[in-house]
Length: 203
Image 1 (tube, rainbow, N blue to C red):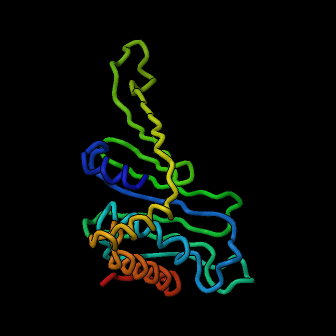
Image 2 (cartoon, one colour):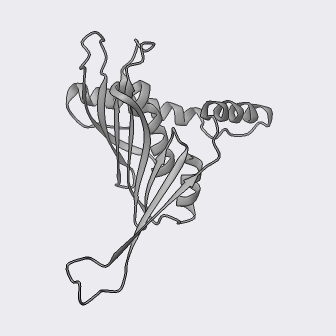
């Protein structure tokens, strides 16, 4: 799904990418005890946004602990500033009764919403139509929405296959060690930001 979005952006199908946001929320997973939701959930969307938008130069985050039985944050909102001057917003929490995994892109020509769970992409656009002089109270705008159903694949399986293929063929994997390190570095900076209440620069 992310690959489809990346390729579509590269071909100019959506126009220029202006802002990007994501929502990754669900109930508290009892298995997680050593880190908070920013490291557990946020790191994935940080990685995706770097892939689509480019390098991050600063991060500002707000978060906290609602469930007093755990010692790490269980909700967080992260604002990323990219090298190109644009921004991305990430919402994560372990407090929502339903599981949501969505990525939204505001582009110059289209609005794109990708659903990780359904592995589908919705592309919306609008255009002006002829003005009806007898009905000046309604805007002559036509809205168009198309739902794109992608071939459903298991993300973790794809990740492992790409890694094995990189080793077998001595080639660069889709996600490199550097990419992983940067995503973790930014997630750690987001945690520091919410704890200290200030923007953190990414060096």
